[in-house]
Length: 183
Image (cartoon, helix red, strand yellow):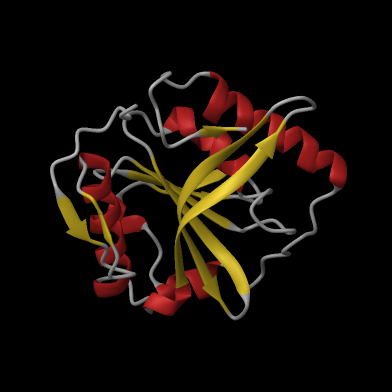
């Protein structure tokens, strides 16, 4: 069964060199990757892309995509998630992901639709930037996270955040969305 993305051909992934399907969403993924390297000063080895995060409720499991995580000095300091449409409605889910992707609180999150972005301090949930150009450069990220606590997430908090992410990312998806994998 084909997913809900129109495949326009193939293209080469900017970060990995792998051949991937050329979709409108993929074009945004490539745009962001290119911006991180060419404009924001990150090295390719500091960026992990196409992460699959396992989330679960007491009786349901699924994996959800996270486009990028930025690792500096052996810590994930920022995550970036793409999603078409409204950014505000995706902020809470992204905060949950920032508490599930590592054993600690990832300090900075970015939700983008490829044309705009919201940058959040994930420890406080406060909006700290609102545009693609506001995505922190490598040096800005080091400064923003210099006093981050990287607090370990409790087992109870993991349960709560996993349920929140499941509700936002899995329960209300289009039946033909093949980016989410229900297990």
